[in-house]
Image (tube, rainbow over all chains, first blue to last red):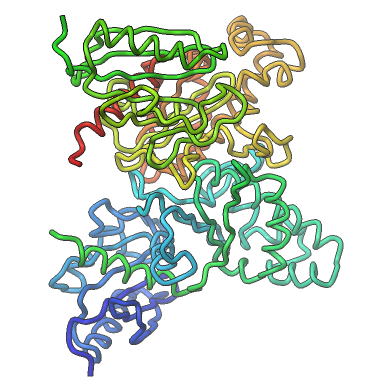
Length: 300
Length: 300
């Protein structure tokens, strides 16, 4: 039996599933659950999952939500998220979950970074950026201990920076973007049809295939160019790499570090750390709980 | 006669001259002076200029300094500035100026943005970036009302972001950087030797010269790619353009705005404002005074 009100409930809403985690204020995991969200009944699924956890664990100290899209400055709702998860835009999560305490909603990539800073590979850092390398490329920025949100909640869309100004426009019109140069969604185009996943490409690179190696080198060059741009703009102490492509491990990190040896500005010899994110798919749920805790601890 | 202690003294140290300005706490200008700094005796020149102003205006409420290079986190000194202004690295400005109150030292581009936010074109804004387009390209970032410094004081080096990953490395090893694509230092290379200044190039563009127009269009495309990258990374409400190249006025701002119509991500139709910085060469001195005032007003 958990005494009531001793845990944080972190929810990470994705287009296919909800991840829910219960953590005590020291970060110890008490429970995790998932629920499907691809149907039109996603709101019912979310409510049922939360109700189930609360009935088992008692009422939470506070709840936090991570979701795709741009979050309102007051963190009550996602204000901009076209396409997926109908009904998410404008949904007031405090009311929706009938919570006695405010339920902050933050962007899922922002949440992932907060999770990594609280309990993952960026623990205790104050200046750090996260790049998530998956189907697309996303990210988030912590500067002097604060998450950057920007004017519309858009800050940290690190996939949408140009690495080749003459390239085709990406999904938000950025020419030759980092997302199109590195994200798994474009691997078929970038490999001229020879590969349908980055994992398969990397497997061929490890077997010594010359054509695959050329594609991978191009990918790593563009990623390195994006990373040094972000280093010069934001001056982090570390760059965290997460997402499925970061699972390539040494096949990514070693040639990338070598490229950074050529391209990174290192004042006085100072080198920015390159680190593999450690919380995986559950970083966003951890970060949602982290944000809920942060608000809970802030004097009102 | 000014009563003593009623003005802020802002110093902007450049490689050729010092700019010194006296402003009252409401931003009214009381005096400005310059002194040469290209000689080995630049420290004597600075001290003489300050002593002269103090003897005329009385002791200042507080003094602030803007200087090239990376500033220490405690703002007592510039920690990294190779090449110019020998003796600047490590110089403790509070001691050097024998000031009874701490003298903050900040990076000159950071100062320029603080100046524009206090008394210039970005007055009152909380999320804004400054790009200075001159010999090189520099900049600074204000996010949620705070100047971004980063881990080493390097944040805001906006000229050193890649716009063409296959391009040659710039002065800090960034491939195909915005600085090399736009800065006046590379105009001779970019125009294939036909022009030695951006001002001359723009004059030919205005006369309808086709070759000059092609170079200018290339410059504007790269600048637009850099700006949309920064918008997606930082999500400002406005982008401020300063420096000599911004003096091109409509010849820059109109085609740049047209390019941004194609390349800018505008969630819900929201468009980031593009604004000409208004304080010119004196923005840094204003910002040094702004920082001094800010510290003066902070409860210790």
